[in-house]
Amino acid sequence: MSAVAGRNLRGNAAGLIAAWFNLPFALFLAAVGAIAGGLIGVVSGTIAGPGMSTRMTVLLNVLLPFPVNVEDLLPTAAFQIGGVIGGILGFLNGAWVMVWLVYSDFWRLLYEGDPSWPLAAVAGQVITALFVAVLYTFYSMTCEGWRLRITGARRPSRREAQWLIPLMAEAARRLGSPGVPVLLIDDSREPNATTWTRHIVVNQGLIDFLRYDEEAMAGILAHEIVHWKNGDAVVMAWGKGLALPLYVVYEIAVKVQQAARWGVLRFLVWAVLWSVYVTVDKIVMPLHAAEWRRCEYRADAEAKAAGYGDGLYRALAWLRQGFDGARSGWDASILATHPPTELRLEALESPHGHYPIAGTPSMVRRTPQATMVRTGPDKD
Image 1 (tube, helix red, strand yellow):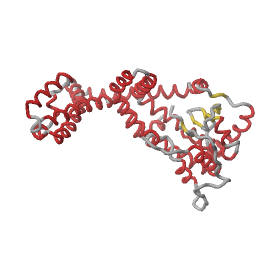
Image 2 (tube, helix red, strand yellow; image 1 turned 30 degrees about the horizontal axis):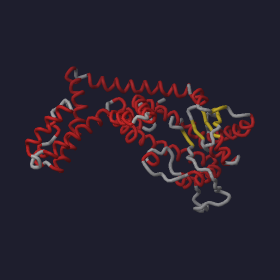
Image 3 (cartoon, rainbow, N blue to C red; image 1 turned 90 degrees about the vertical axis):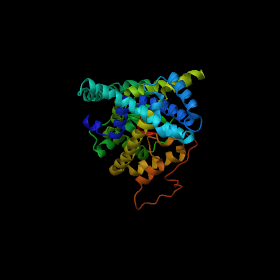
Image 4 (tube, rainbow, N blue to C red; image 1 turned 135 degrees about the vertical axis):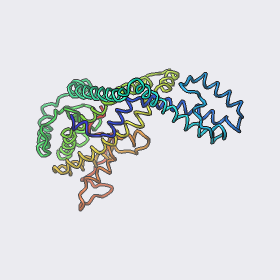
């Protein structure tokens, strides 16, 4: 377990702090303070005069019952300057004051009660987070087979087992794996292979797409066994467990927004939980995604070192021709769990090999299908 906890330290630390130390709440209050400070800053000083500023502060104090006076959100310079510059100063200062309030007052009150309480509170939060992470990881591992079968995975048929299991056993031997994961087949037409904590799931769509090319299939399986041997899916489960309260709220909010047909409900969910979206989507998940991309390169490199480079290269080249597309937008680029296939191919190439940019008939085959492909550990 210590080896798992020691992986992806940045992502795990971000998840722990975000979920257990009020980061979404601090972001929410920072936004409110920034808006209030910006409004007061704009109408202060020489732009609207002190009368308008006073009326605005009174109104905001009524509408936004802050634990501090709204005027405290502005530096003195904002009152004197006003206008756009005053608004910018008020925006920045208001955000900072509210963030400082969330953390400083809480810990100050604890310290005033007993100087040892802040340390005890931090230790209690960290221990609780670690306990939840252990429980979630244990749940992910023990209930995995049941969960996969519910989602459609099945045992391989006799014919499938006679072909794929010897390939897996040979790959495990060459990679120095202490064992062989359980193989399951998903009848989905999406060409995909996924590594879990105890299983490897191969989609029928991948087998069909590779046209039963044994070398290409062996390369994909070797790549997946590296993920399994290195415990990448366990590390992923551990990271999610550390931030589990945050992920639970995030996933509930996403599902409510997707299911809600009433626009007002969708807006209300967003208005209340936008800081959770920002924390997960813009802070925690990018750090985890960066680690998963490193895992992909590592799995490719270990599979190549074990002699599976050519087969894996051919499989990725075929998949790139049929399925890779532009990575436009935050989700497709920053949150991508896999590097661009072209860069993975580059890392697999031998220094003295010949690799035409357009591919060759022996290396690349076009396909009319076009869906997204993912190999490697699942997001869980």
